Amino acid sequence: MDLRSELLKSIWYGFTALDLEKSGKVSKSQLKVLSHNLCTVLSIPHDPVALEEHFRDDDDGPVSSQGYMPYLNKYILDKVVEGSFNKENVDELCWTLTAKKNYQPDRSSNTVLPDKDAFRLWCLFNFLSEDKYPLVMVPDEVEYLLKKICMAISIECVELEDFFSQDAVQQSGITVWVFLEMMNSGKITRGIDKSIISMAIEEVYREIVGDVLKEGYLWKKGQLRRNWKERWFTLRPSNLSYYTGEDRKDCQGNIVLDGNCCVEVLPDRDGKRCMFCLKTLSKTYEMSASDTKQRQEWTTAIQTAIRLHVEGKSSLHKDLKLKRREQREQREKRRQAKEEELQRLRALQEERERKLAELELLKEAQKQAQALMEQDEQRRRQQHEQLQRALEIQLREAEEARVSMQAEMALKEEEAEKQRKRIQELEEMQKRLEEALQQEIKARLDEEAFRYAQAGLLAEEEEKMKALMALQEEQEEYILKTQREKQELKQEMEAKSRALDEAQRQLEEVRANRHRVDQDVVAAQRKLRQASTNVKHWNVQMNRLMRPIGPGEKRPSLGSSFSSFQIPTQRDPGLRLRRRSGSEDQDEESKENVDSRAGCDLEKRRSHASNGDMDIP
Image 1 (cartoon, rainbow, N blue to C red):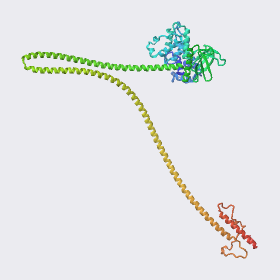
Image 2 (cartoon, rainbow, N blue to C red):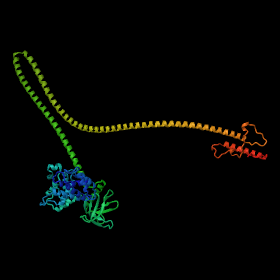
Image 3 (cartoon, rainbow, N blue to C red):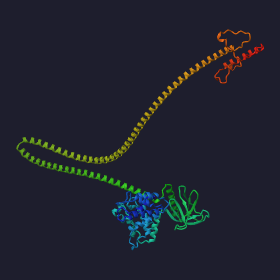
Image 4 (tube, rainbow, N blue to C red):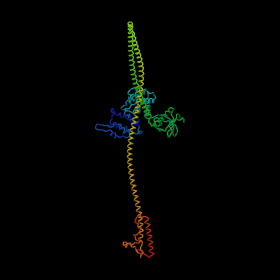
């Protein structure tokens, strides 16, 4: 049971107390006051605008389209933080609202409990009640609570048969007001002082509602001064606190319990007996109980608290309540199974009685048949006697009729023998009928067992068939998915194949282009070599033509076209063989031709200079 469920139980009493007409509706002004008080005790901010927006007014009056529960969950309970408020204040608020309307005991009686004790019993009732509305407590939980209170008072528990004899109580349980009326009747606490009853109720309240596993005085050894002091210890599932007195006003320390803690029994020393220690990760606390029984109870309680913390449970009694509820459910299941078994046995008994009735009818019919046979036999005997007398008379009269009468008697005796055999066959048939009836009863029992087994097999077969259908659907989905992936892969492969063919075609085109370019390069190289050869040839021709003609030499007659031709000198800028703006791709052979031509010109100038010739300007 979580915190929200505990709060809703108390708030339910407050809400129903405001419903004066028991119509399930509360006015908006009362809901505002209830919401504001709940926000105050729960330590959360109150938003009155949200309540106004949630419950609007129209021409027909106040209308609640969603009800108070959604508002309570959204704007109040969803904002609650565990540990930021005191739950006892919430319970006191709701108890104040509901006690004014529902709790009105006879104050003149001496057995009436004080309001504080009634409030604590109301809280205990809410804790142990079922999680259904309206809230009731089943008889088992009432008996458990009364046993707790009687154990705290140290009296024998009163017989509860008087309280559980009513059919309504046995079926649905009792309400808290019936429970308080029962407690105020004095049947349980008659002759006991009210202070003792109040102390017992407070002890049970702290144990169940306050999650106190154990309380009492223990001697504790100091951590610094190492002296022994008596302290009041309070054990809860999460911690072990100790105070100077049982009023629990001055807390001297708090020991946090977790899975790393352990309890060990110590030998007697320092004048102390019944010693034990509580070990944590940081410290070891030494304590001493009053006797061995108290030491055993304290060590068991501390180990229980550590176990609850390790198991992630916040309350021992919540766990015990769930276990008791599970036990009740198991008992109810066993009771239902027993009732079903009894019904089945009754059906078998009825079937058996029906078979026995049929057998009785058969026996009666057999008796009637036997009586008829006896009457027939007696009638035959009488006839036989009459016939015998008639035969005797006829024997005297005629000897010839004797033979025929003897034959007739033989026939009658044979018929009687057949009747006796028939009686024996009927007796055997009765025995076989009884055996068949026993076998039929056994077969019915076996058939019932086989039907249960067949029902189990059919259920298992249905589950297997569902699993098979699910696997078949998954297989079909996987096949469809595989086919789609195969189709996509096929399309992708076709696209890649087309791309590969296109790339192959482009590669072939590139290779063809490269081959043509290689051929063009070879042709260009060939033309270049041919042009180089031509340049060499024309350089030689030009060098031969550029030789100067001295005085008195005859010019060769080259025809009229060369009569006006003048040979330029070497200084003529038109004869420069290397121009800076010339082409850069002239090869080395042209350079050698130019150098050789320059050497020839130099030799010619030297020869002309030795002959006294002058350069042509």
